[in-house]
Length: 448
Image (cartoon, rainbow, N blue to C red; front, side):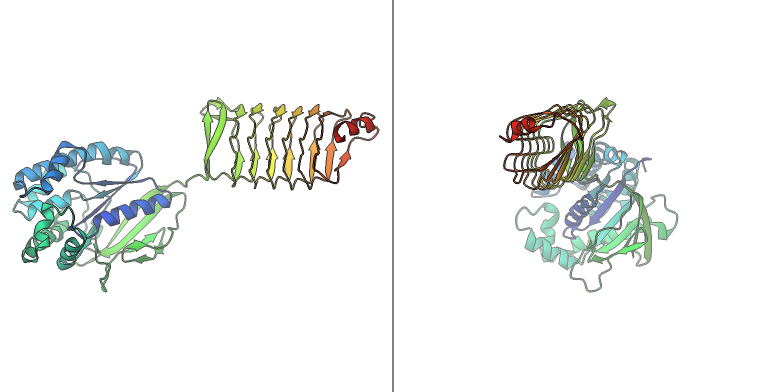
């Protein structure tokens, strides 16, 4: 066998036609993906290689190819499949699930008279060992019924004899080749109990279901006819999966594999140079980093978090010096904000319609643009730092529950018209004692 040091996991599904290989393969890939794994589905023969296409074309020909030619094409296609798909993705740490592998060659070409020792020998020269092979066992009559009833369209040459019940011997012979092969495989395991081939029923109606027991980190995962029906008890890092099943000699076997799990992040920020331009996922409590790939983060782009319903809090480092407009508009669950101390201008409608905004640190802002807090209906109190020199018109428009505005500076900032429009009653203005700049003229400048 090829020596293939890899970080991923290689899982193989095998079985006669109609046993459910494709369904189970795709189910496992979808299930692993939903649990945070990077899993991919492949199949043999491939659909893109020249030998793979020749094989698939031959499936619908009146007669099968000569057995040696058929075997040669499968072997050539397998080499391409491993080189182009399986090995690179295993080296990237992915879980590769293949629908058929060289065990099918042993069964299908072996059933046609080609020496299966020779088939194994040639395949072992070019193949890598799967971490686990799940061999779906199904009664021949059940397989034939599935093929006959479910594959009216596009039945291939491998299945034509199966549709004819007078030729059940063909399917039975293929099944025999599958069953006798595993004990003879030389796959670097010395003990019978260490074989990495597990026999599973492919019959969902089998009352004597021999589907394996599956344990994840020593906790049994309930299964129903071979399908998981519980979220796996995963932990970050290395997870141990143990399969207990019946092997081809009708003996109980145990196989353990390890898979590294990295939880999916709740969200990822999208960058363009030193600017945050958006996000993916469901950000909740966001801390903007100081840098990304050694590029300092200096700005938040316009509408970067607009309409983000999951966002509850955000904090910015002092490397950020500017924001675009509408950055947090309609973030209806945003409650807490800490701005960079180096942002000087809060653009128009930055926090407009953040209905649940309750706590905000404005840093060292100098200018608050018009309608910056429009529609923040649950904002009760806001502190205006002593750096603010200008608050433009309608800044707190429709902040219906705003009751207290605290000015820290001795010098009253310049105010635009109708800063508190539609806020009734007017909020209480708090300012340093004995500061003569907070006078009636100043007050009237933004209320009349």
